Length: 279
Ligand SMILES: [Zn+2]
Image (tube, rainbow, N blue to C red; front, side, top):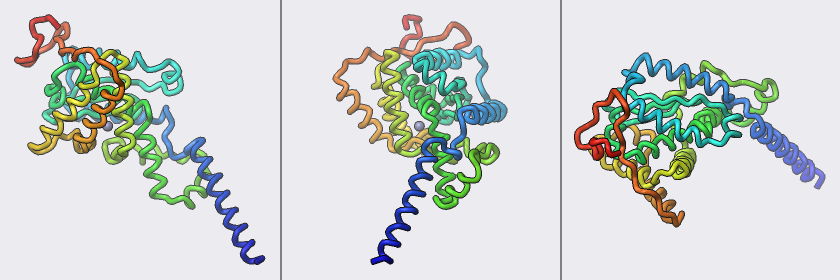
């Protein structure tokens, strides 16, 4: 009996230790890059992209379009969030056939012309923008990084390290994981879809645009697979989820808005609906 009580008691000590450890991790996760670290890493990574890839100049119409729509969404982020998480959003276009777009931690977003050229209306552009912005706003990369570190180390090692050191985030180690080596979880992907959905609706766009992009990507993928789907699989289920959300909202959304030529520097593709200047 005494032995049994002893065992029980020890069990409770261990449980308490684990709880304390978990609580400490939840409060201030020393594995999670801080806001300023995320901004710094993203900035450095964006510089690498600008050096390696053919990034279109500021004067290009597609860049102007992306920045106009991006700024519109950034302006809708609540002031408190901007204060707490002062990410530095930037929007660039890479000349490449890749059907892709990606967000770097801390703010930079890149679209490839291969994707941009396939988007039929502003709603589709805004749908992808809202999705990518959510990865930044909700610090998905930082969470994936911290989770990965903890998985590698195991709980006992974590408790020891946390006790010894309040900030064990390693900038150099983290930099290697900025480019796609940490795929976002299904949870983060669907969060990016739903938060992006709400943001585009708030901006006055039709969320059908977001569903249409995933439908388009699903079709394109049959011919070899666009890059975007490598990091964002399961397009059919996503379309279903987005369309269910549209239906459940019970709202009627405004018609999709055609893309329009920007003031200068644009060579618009033949066949885009409103090239006469109506849009
Ligand atoms: Zn995503």
